[in-house]
Length: 384
Image 1 (cartoon, helix red, strand yellow):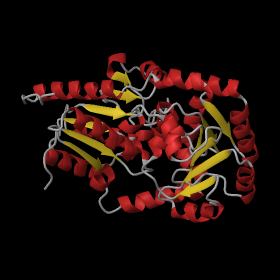
Image 2 (spheres, one colour; image 1 turned 30 degrees about the horizontal axis):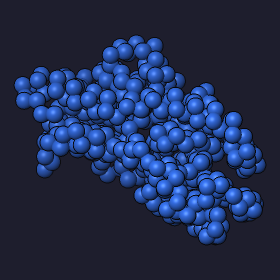
Image 3 (tube, one colour; image 1 turned 90 degrees about the vertical axis):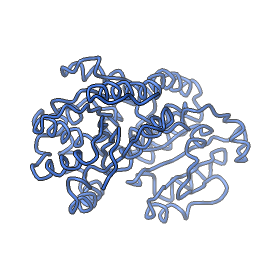
Image 4 (spheres, rainbow, N blue to C red; image 1 turned 180 degrees about the vertical axis):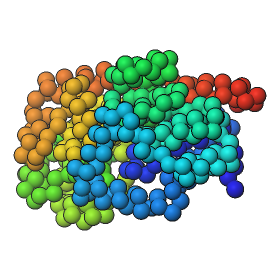
């Protein structure tokens, strides 16, 4: 039997970003008032208790072996106003209703689009007025996140996304631009020089941080790492995370001098603080972690729909470079190292965009909505 909660955060494990955002939101709320009870729940464990594990395995198969099929579905959802209605079914909705009756939340936050779809369907079918906040975890302007009818509130990454929602008929007072929720350590001031000294990094070394995400999309040819090794002024840190296959593939290039391969580290915030350049895929979370760290980046081979859309934002705002080959990657690295004027121009654009990140405003927005919900239910406000 689950305990009742004040705030229920519904998410899904299609990639790690949605859960990361959920945990960040929970952390900020608890820091503000630890008396507020927050539950993070994978919605698919509730509505598809038998099939959800196979669904996630199917997702991993799609993004690894059938990207065109994945992207067809992604763009269909974003370009069609009715396509998302296919995501709800009666038996799943009934399971969700039973779960919500059990935990009795005062407020629901969704960090995955299908969660918003199910909650709006639930509210309509069961005549429930529980407030719903959808936190959009990418810099996208399509229908996937907004084509759900009665969704009262949104937290979005940028003012451009906010404007796109307003153009779709959503009232501006229902939308808060606060950036994509990231962990507090990325927003705390850091002394990059001291951090570099601790790591034994010389002042004239150019530090590159490379992260490939779950797909492992980083260069994997010997030629690229030989090129890095020849440029002794470069210090390259490669983070493979929990991708064991990627680690085994890249680890042989770990020379212990200017190429360092790490399977996992909890020091990403510090590393972003002292790095000169990030090479990564354009996931929304990593993108805003880099923005908050004043870190220029090169996007390497974006392939999934949301990554391509995030890439358009990067290109439009001149926040970095997007490359599609190892040859282009080497050229881009060289330009960042040698063209100080270009680098400073990118940093100015990053500084402009990072001002949209406001976790304090996001938390206050959530708590204000929670207060109103509590009052409407005749409950006492949680003191904060």
